[in-house]
Length: 126
Image 1 (cartoon, one colour):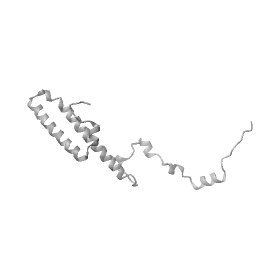
Image 2 (cartoon, one colour):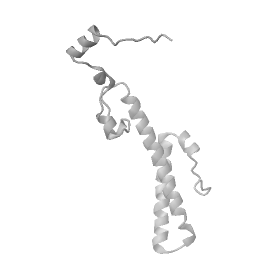
Image 3 (cartoon, helix red, strand yellow):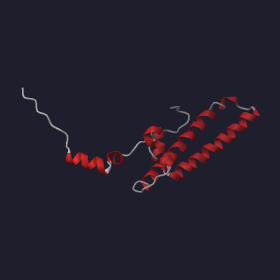
Image 4 (tube, rainbow, N blue to C red):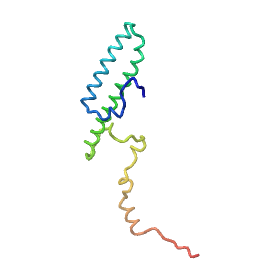
């Protein structure tokens, strides 16, 4: 990670939500001032800092969204329905596949046949 940014992920994770919002506001103000410098054309040596600040903002937003998703998953943990974006990411075929309970079900005729005529067991004498 770049030493100029001063935003280490380990440090950011330990911060509270309020501290992160304060930090993101500071970075946004700094980015705005850097954009002004960019448009006026003064101090071209500071322009490389724009990408560093933008990445710092992205890191903080990522941490905030991860925390939000984690709290929502805990909220919906025991409920019957869960929002689509919190569900497991499966392939389309797996989403449409039968559940194990549905796959195990039998018709009345098939269950009677299985009960009355069990599978034959053969023993080989060697």
